[in-house]
Image (cartoon, rainbow, N blue to C red; front, side):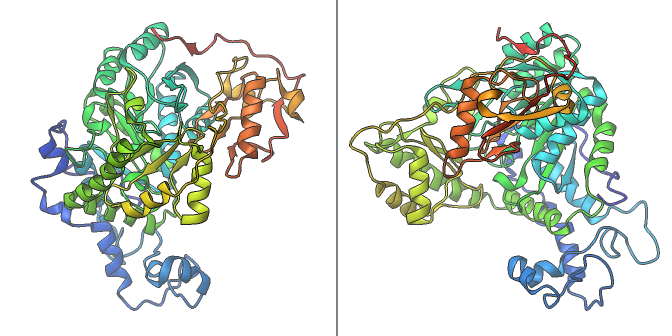
Length: 533
């Protein structure tokens, strides 16, 4: 981040209104029509520079022609380093410490748009945001309540910060075989059972779009005097229209990780961290700022940062674009509801006590009974129609519609209807294995001496790795857990699939597994598994 990124004059201090009028911006602040950081970059690039500085391409397509074909000559032209005169510095002689720089102004506008007290732009994705958030937890204590079905980057953060999570297990849909959210009662139970917990860390929405009751969970966390941290990676568009769920920071969350590129339309690897309102958010603000600066590159991509600025401007000031995208998502959903072959998965997503809403931009097409698996449907859509869905499981296709990106409904529907149908219902293997037994703390197992063994010999041994079928990237096995035959078979089946990928695997075929060496000293601590109330 720029040297003066900690400056945040005129930031909002009162909790925002959660009404649709404010969250949508029917009365749009004229400043939201500006993109201060992106505009400063374009202004700088319009001048005739002899660039004798990093990056080494120095803004010329002639220097790296292949790169120009990837990002365009204009993209290379705005690829300026941090602390550059005219952007982060006011002029070539000095920095005015009272000046609100373009990046700070851009972050202020984003904070106001999403209802945060403060926002940081980051350029290493929501994964980096989760590393930041877990490090913040370490600044508060070592124990905390953590949803088990978190992204694997959260587990990486747990390892880095040597945290001791007490897991609360979210609902698993046995039909779609997807993980969703947790309830306020489950969070209250976990905090009561583990009173030394320093924070609550949950995911909402889920990969399939299930939205948890964040307002009620925030009340529970605050009643136990701990902050609520939400991985809202899949909900960066929330709160931008009355037909969308309200975003977590407006509902009382204290720290929110937002993957701006997933729903809001910025470039891949760009994300935000939002700070909430109230005593818990105020308590962690300085800590969050220090941690963000320690993780953010000192050579952050101007292209990625400016893409957040432009995505925010477009999302806030063009509600009609959101409506157009919503209309196409709903049209696909309506057609699926009326179809005799495929089925809308929304009722299943809303079928548990954990979900109070569903993301309308996630369209779940249930393929059970359709004579084809979701995985095979994905393969044929790619091969024959050049249509790529966000996720495929044996039971479903999951479509992601960008918040301002209407879909060609006819093209998708024609391709879906053209999929062949088997005379007999195809076998749909179990997607999500059961939880494994914990024997060591996550960090202890990760840093212990490890051995690589054949898969058959790994069963019954303690895993040294965090292994996650990707997507969605939820770890199926954690370091310190005992490898079961079920999870070994599942991970090997995933790796053998045409699009199979297991994050964290040292062997892409999963013929071997890394386990804690038998001569490593055992570490015994109380189990972190939390049973629902």
